[in-house]
Image 1: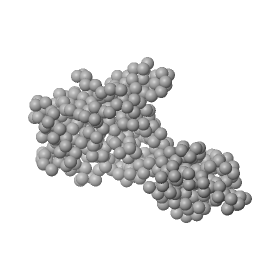
Image 2 (image 1 turned 135 degrees about the vertical axis):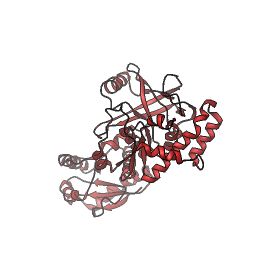
Image 3 (image 1 turned 90 degrees about the horizontal axis):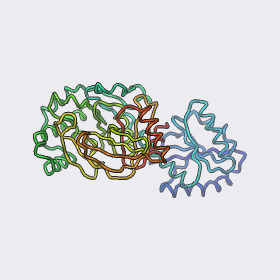
Length: 413
């Protein structure tokens, strides 16, 4: 990660005095970050060449200087200020001007710890944007018929994230399935195969070869279309193959490849964003029960990334009673729930505590109970005002750990 630091200093201030004043401030930030800035000074000619670029407003009276160099800057502009020599006032004027021009940015200001933490988050955000830019996500089949609100805005994905959607007929999976074998599956799949052979009930063994062949078929499609993620109209496999994609998706996600169910593209995009930011694809799940008074909810689905669970077992797919589904147990503790709308205009993000894992017979096989963080009124507001009055579709994605600041920083820009 390279971070370029560019400076704006009013000619009314003594350069040597400003340099001396700034040195301690910058050194403290570098020490907290554990890396050194690429200090470029007032030369903005290569602005945009680093993983992250920051404009360090060192004094007041720099607003005009900023206007002169702003044309060279693309994307959101991050403004660092120490608060000395009227630098914060100038930064606020600059940011107000940016907003009036329809541009986005923010002022990074506060304690050394806060500044370092914020820069660290922004660096991760930029890294994630770089990972997403230029990728192709596959839609195998079409969104399931019941996803009447989960529509993807393809131009918005391309313009804002550089992501292209590729349509692939479900028949291609069936064709690859019939050509596939269960040999040379790869490390993650071989590990899952060993787990299956050791733990799966005998009644499921009739579905094992088919489940792993679906995985192999999807891997072949990934290579053919150069995909970085996919979602599949998985219920069509029940009739065409007599099996489900739950196990295949669990393995693909464990390999760092966002893979979703039911052809739900907005949920796949949410998983891809989370994967780029945290390295985990997340658990795509349906809220099955919500208690607005306690802020507790039960989320369930028949697949989960195998690298998200502390242990797992196998069962049939819930709705059909066939195939191989995952009964996973996530570690208890901090979690974050995320959902991005199909047109990228809305984001829901909240932190929660994972309280327990369940195994009820009348729900999808992986079941988690989470409680929204906050006081009683805050928990009730999230449940009643968002989930029960204005949700973004039915599927939401659960990530282990507390990532609200990171997710919100990504979606802000």
